[in-house]
Image (tube, rainbow, N blue to C red; front, side, top):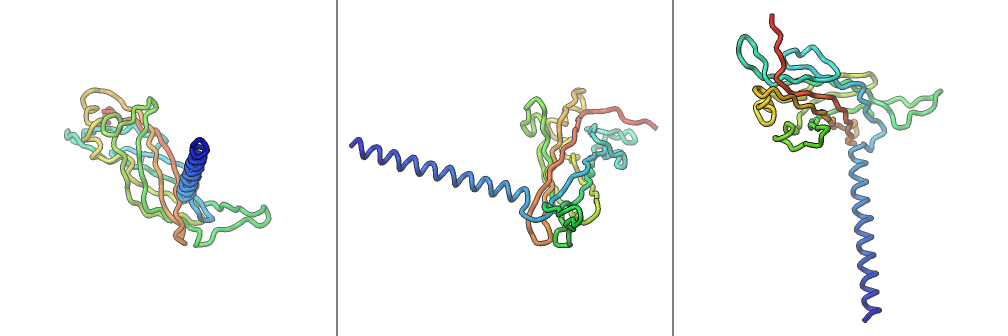
Length: 209
């Protein structure tokens, strides 16, 4: 009976080890898929943001105003993000013969995902931070740097918890907006790139004319 127990234990251990190896392989494939299997990849040169009430004033951080008075009317705006991207090759080649991208290596972005993170670890969506969301965009990165504008804070978030309360309580919520850009090269291989920017939510003072 003892020998049978040992054989059963060894068999169970082997099955468990095989399951762990399989799970690791699946996880590795997922990581590879997200990083991209193509020969080119994205470099985020800069991520900036601007208040919706001042859409041309981009900066390296965003004081997101939860309510803006326009002609004596309380108004909410989408806040904007602007990303600057360039393409690079995984195999850069040599100094005398650098690898040059072809049109097959060009990368087209088709969507993005925004989530907000607090440094204190209080990250419950709809309670501590605004809800994460996905947005669509179409932007192709070729041999030169390109930039694209997108929504980084939705106006609907300013009418929901926890931002809505900031219109009256004077509290400021400091977060990091993590933006993941998803796309594919022209052969269909998927890839992504991540960038972050500081976003402070509050009822900030409005400019007077």
